[in-house]
Length: 233
Image (cartoon, rainbow, N blue to C red; front, side, top):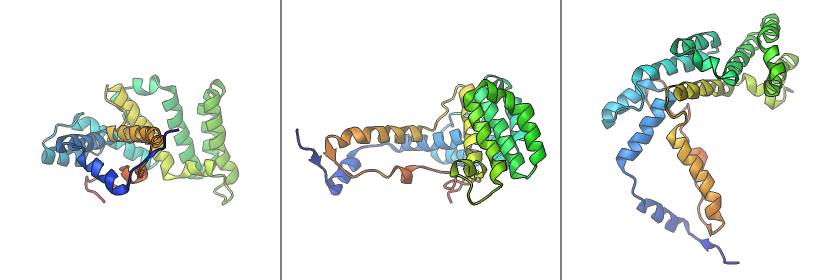
């Protein structure tokens, strides 16, 4: 077996620094992130400063931002109404997305302590869909388990996470991707795709060489990195 090549950190950094990436390409990655994720104020400012045209119009960015904000504060009905205002086919042709929004509404009812309303909503709106789709049924059962534990410290993580801010972000991200896809735009940030490509390539290279690994978690731009006014935080 051919021994693996060992690359020191200094040599690895020298090789990376020799790779030429134009400022224009970097600016386009940033613009793609801001436009795709729906940060209209930041996209407008960056568009002017970098002299770049956004990949989508600013009005569509604002619509997606309003939908995301509604979901992040738990107002599922408003979010669904705004989605339907954009295009009713988005929800009509995506049963999984529609179910997840209804599931999010059920979660919000449970969060508010409206047990009777939650039970009625689950029975009238979600039970039939659960019977038709095993995956939906599993998600419905997991959501209804919130009633059994009632915010107990012994609540299993897989159930407790439904009440976390991350669950709202997950639903908002799914809606955002569907809107972009429906309008013919890429539904995933190009920067994330590049990081996924890096994650895929590293194990292949590792078979032939030892080299410093990239901390992918440090390379991801999250909700906490950019606030809604467009400034870094």
